[in-house]
Length: 229
Image: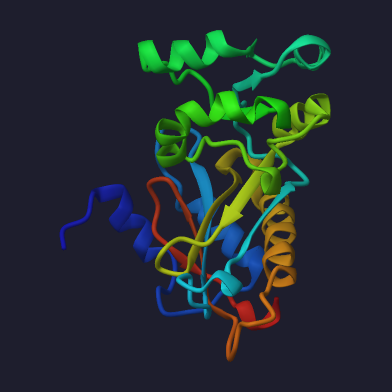
């Protein structure tokens, strides 16, 4: 495989077969992120569970200690007092049926998160088929179907992330930006890994954490010593 010059340089900076401690891995991911933009740092965790089994799902949300470094646009679908509360809490867009109609007729997706109240789920359900594949469908488990819309907005703006298992039993989740530096990235990494470990399903058998890798948008994957986590 032929690599770009910067990527090839990054590969020389570390040992691809070695498992690095968290702080060292974060230092390397910062050093090997050589793009001209502020690269996102992602955590990839392979778990020893069967994602096809309902009792072996791993999913949750948490607010990262240092946020994600990305400002998220929030759409709130609500009425009355809840709509007023959403606007006051800093939602980027607030509305009810007219927002659903806009998404349906204009294919409008200028937002990153959808928050709604339980009484509006019937309305939101009309666009479930377009929101679902994009990972935008509100869900009580992720805190995006709630009466406390103000709290939900503040958590999203503060850097709330959702982690969930994909079909190959891997969790992919952002933990910040290169500009955070290794200390802040390490704090976010540890918070997310703690959450994943605590979310271990009772039905999971054998080794739970199979591998842990961190990578920047354009950089190589760096393996983390998960035995110490």
